[in-house]
Image 1 (spheres, rainbow, N blue to C red):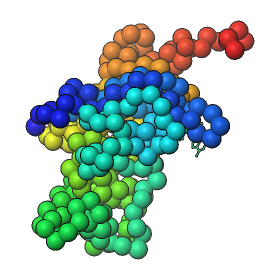
Image 2 (image 1 turned 135 degrees about the horizontal axis):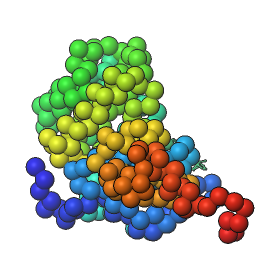
Image 3 (image 1 turned 180 degrees about the vertical axis):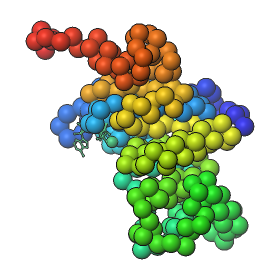
Image 4 (image 1 turned 90 degrees about the vertical axis):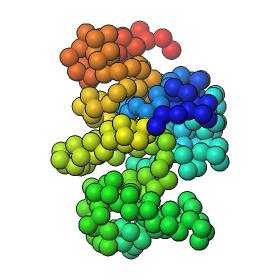
Length: 260
Ligand SMILES: Nc1ncnc2c1ncn2[C@@H]1O[C@H](COP(=O)(O)OP(=O)(O)OP(=O)(O)O)[C@@H](O)[C@H]1O
Ligand SMILES: [Mg+2]
């Protein structure tokens, strides 16, 4: 499933000197990182470190971006990427007054308009409902669903176009442990069975263990990049959380002498 005739190669995303300004200050400071094709990359870091900003840059919705950011062999935001990149924002974005199926029908029609695509649209909706395990709730109003179910509808919307790259902004926040496990199983199934590349953010370090690779972020910079095992052994840590804290200490030694 992993043909890369489009020149994307081993990296689905490549960033060099990526800087983003929001308001009157830079919030991403010249980042270099890659996201490997067909792998699950966790973007981890504390609240406000710039995870959502980085994701918005990757999907091409972030203004005032400088540096190089290539996604599936194109500059981020290129029109050719529209159907190839799926994005789930931090706040689930579905229409509360439509049923689950009507939401999916609507977004499928935006993605692939016209009578010629009617059968393909219907198939995509059926498949996406099954992917997120909401087939039996298809006729419920989205507004009547639980928070976890609503975020799965958002995920189903992102899966409609069979994206090669799925960008998920804190998809498991506020979910119970069973739902979290089920979602991670789905992410792994998408990566392993369909070759989907997944970039998923979290500020909960224990989700790190479920990722193939990690980008650890702090204050608009990438502290470290690599597999959870490699990060732990490099820092002599038992957990990714401990590794993160050691990297923070290395980057900014305690005391008042920090250079201005
Ligand atoms: N619209 C905005 N205008 C100005 N600054 C903003 C705006 N949105 C976010 N920021 C700033 O950009 C920085 C990064 O925000 P971002 O939302 O990317 O962080 P995050 O890591 O996703 O946080 P969280 O885990 O809370 O979602 C923060 O310091 C935030 O205050
Ligand atoms: Mg965020």
